[in-house]
Each structure stands twice: as C-alpha cells, then as structure tokens.
Length: 265
Image 1 (cartoon, rainbow, N blue to C red):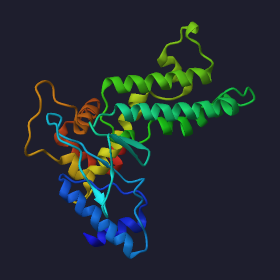
Image 2 (image 1 turned 45 degrees about the horizontal axis):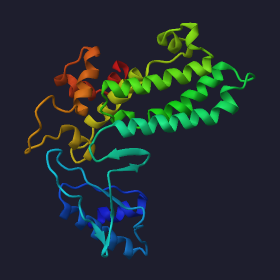
Image 3 (image 1 turned 90 degrees about the vertical axis):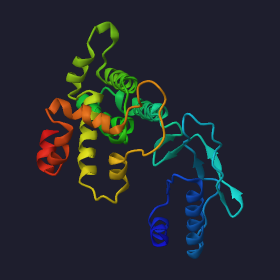
Image 4 (image 1 turned 60 degrees about the vertical axis):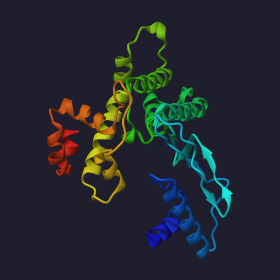
C-alpha cells in the first residue's frame, strides 16, 4: 500500500482516495503525508477537502479528517479534474457546471468566430464541435442521466447551433432540421455512443481495477426508501444496448470483440 501511495504522489498532482470508513481515510491521509515528507513535499491544506456522502436516511455528522492536527475542510461538493462531485450523488450540479462552461466558451467565440461573416459556416461548426461540445459533454461517458438532464443539455446545444446557423424561432425550423443542417446528431445519441464505448472498455478491464469493481459491485447491507429506486449506471447501459437488439447477458460476450463492438456502436 505504501508503494502505491508513493507512485500516486510522484505521478499525480490531484489525488482523490475513497474509503467506506472514516478511520480508513484518516490512515490513508496519514500515510500520504508521511510519503510526501520523504520527498520534501507538503500537502496543501487549503486545497485539500473532505467530501462525506452519508446514508440519505441517516443524520450522520461530516467526517473529521486532519493532517498533523489541522482539520481538513468538509464540503458538499468539489471539482475533480473538471467534474463536480456532489455529496448526494446527483448529477444536477455536474450538468449545470458543464452548461456554464460551454456557455462561457460560446461567449468567447461569438466575437471572433460566430459573428464573423468572413468565416465559413462549416468552419464555425467544426470549431463548435471541437471546443464547445467537448466542454458540454466532458466525462459524459460516466454520467447516470435522467430525462431532465438530457433535456437541459439538448436545449443548450440546440440554441447554440441556431445562433451559428442564424435560425430564429420565427423561422419555424424544427430542432431535428437544425441538427441535419449542422451535420450532427442529438446530444442523447452522442452520450449513448460514448457510454457504450466506455462500458466496453470497463468490461475488458482487469478485476482489480476500480471502475470494473464499481460497475459490477452490489451492496451487501442497507435499505432504500420506499418508492422507485435511484437509477444506476448499469441501468443506463442496459437501456442503451436495447436498440441494438442485445440482451444484458450478451454484453460481455460482444464486448470481448473490440472491433465488432465499435462497429455495432
């Protein structure tokens, strides 16, 4: 375990260890602090935060984690490599953050690209796909989306494309026609393709990898509240493979053939 922590300190400037118990997290933090001291490094107390994801039915207090007596700041959300992770596990803040970042990019490009009449429309669309779309759908392959999230993302994408194509609502042009003119697919289709490619990659991972353990993991204890259960990522995968005529039991078999899977997607 100590050697693994050393590698994380040497080759990653942003580390997010996860544990089930507060004592285990405190142990990892202590070992990380010891390893960094061996290399003459220090952990930034101002940038290090603790996110506690409690049982929704409990009123547990936030975890108390410290480094050399200094308590780390507990937060309800934090950004890790551009993604917003919330304490309640929902995707609301992540989608809002993605839309805000993409909207900022659209604003920066408006004066230099979008509103320039000497720039061809095909060039504007290529810039849009390369810059705006990548910010909007960053890490979408790992999202567990509900219909409300898809509608928000689709609405922003349609509005930004209409501004590039100079299409107003008075023109009575449907959203599907806007996508056809832009030579692109819907946001939902783009996310579906990305998630299927990621699922195939995770299935072929080694058993020791964390993404595969999370995909195949099951809770051994605990109860959920009455009502419909929360949507899981594996539920999204099962829904996405249905249009291809595949059953969940056939997923692993088809994922082993990487070339055939990409062609199917």
